[in-house]
Image (cartoon, rainbow over all chains, first blue to last red; front, side, top):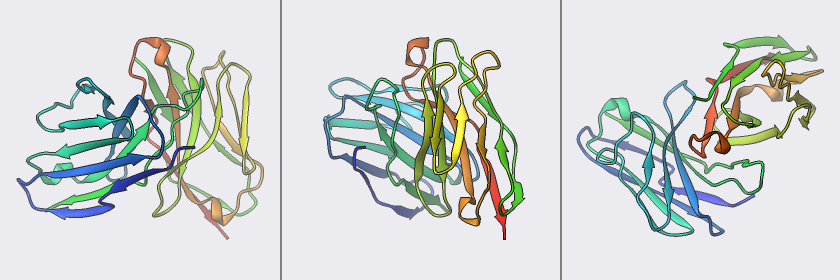
Amino acid sequence: SAVISQKPSRDICQRGTSLTIQCQVDSQVTMMFWYRQQPGQSLTLIATANQGSEATYESGFVIDKFPISRPNLTFSTLTVSNMSPEDSSIYLCSPEGVNAYNEQFFGPGTRLTVL
Amino acid sequence: GNSVTQMEGPVTLSEEAFLTINCTYTATGYPSLFWYVQYPGEGLQLLLKATKADDKGSNKGFEATYRKETTSFHLEKGSVQVSDSAVYFCALSDPGGGGADGLTFGKGTHLIIQP
């Protein structure tokens, strides 16, 4: 499986500010997925980021709130903009499935707390 | 659209008890099915997978069989240990169904094993 790292691992932010989360993968992948895990909840897909094109957002998520960059095939960032306490979650990145099963592996996550 | 339904937790068992965590799914295509586990304070790990009907995924004493006729993928273990205490997520991947290539997760089942 790919080695996936995220920065920061955790942060505490003030309402109204923005935080950019970085995801680095040790192999080249076409698609990168960003998920959110709210406290005590399951994972929800935020968007899919393809290198060289705009990210595709799932229902309920918009680019203005969660802008994504994908400058190359091993790196992506997710920004949580104009944060509110409701954005307190763990944010995880996951590269596209490594085989026909589309099994996906996850980064360690970024635990965000918004005060 | 795709969805995953799994039994509500927490599920509390004594050590060496038999475990079943139910999972059923709805998908438009022919999905791959997964169980992920999240140990306290750790990231999400792939536990096992199955890609077609009647496949059995297994790992660490856990098993799950892909039942297309009942659209189920129940997780079982014959004798649980305290170290199995974690949150378990059932998930599916259905890229051929026209939806996102990311995973659709169930809400998670918190398993507590008492000595």
